[in-house]
Image 1 (cartoon, rainbow over the protein chains, first blue to last red):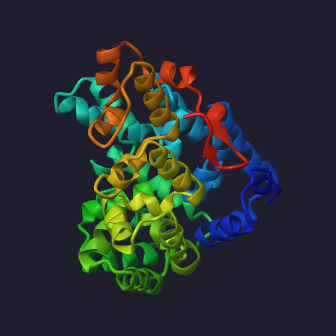
Image 2 (cartoon, chains in turn red, brown):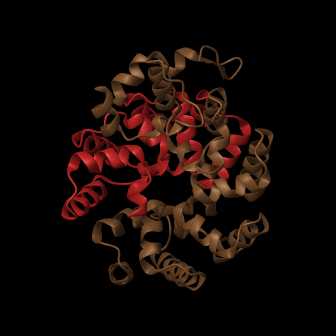
Length: 131
Length: 235
């Protein structure tokens, strides 16, 4: 939990995080630090990371490989500000790269161009949840 | 084997193999028989509450922890949300968009957010209206909500958020950068032209020849943001 305090999360925030996802207490500081590091590597600042963890503490239990694949997929489709995307919809971090592929495939089949699909996702990071 | 039976059930329900592996990975600590029972029980409950199978599959994919909650918790959360002023159908719709609400404490989290937004000047009815439009407000940290509302207050457009709460999805960084961009062009954003802040990137680039990334780098929100006062100092 030391890593959470280092991010500037308050006692109340941490209490809410534990309430939302009790299993977080079983994670080691090292495990938490690794998942936080991935976010820092995509230019999430402490504020973004706080926002993400308060909304979606389950992110800390996600497999690092799955998260890296997700980020690679988003870069592949030319999403530039991935940090802001996750800040706007922290639950996107629960998605796997295959889900992004599925979403894009479905939209392409409906006749949309990739550029438009990506633009819609950046404008409304919840759109993948709505479809 | 119970795992095969569970997978078969989930495939028939509408999940694909990758979804199933992803969801089951969340619950590796649980006995497969108990897990199977929980998943079936919760799916059945959610259907009786008004969700379609397609809704439930989407909710579980968005929020794999869905199956960790008890039936009592799920039913109680709906009742508690109704006590806040939402209709039953409102609650069903809100949770469909934000299934993580099952994990948020009503007292410490949701009511506290409402209280914080009241302190920001919105009425109770405003808040109910805003959260119906954008349930994810309940997932935002209050720090995040305050920063966004304060930014739009400095622009004198915070009142439009009651009718257009979905604008709260846009990051402070982008809204600020666009505001400053327009200001430098002699366009001051106000309640008549505020949609300019929120046009999609492709359209913005077509009109002005600049993408979001470059714009955000040109007008750095953090440089203007005063941590001490929690306000923008040079807008």
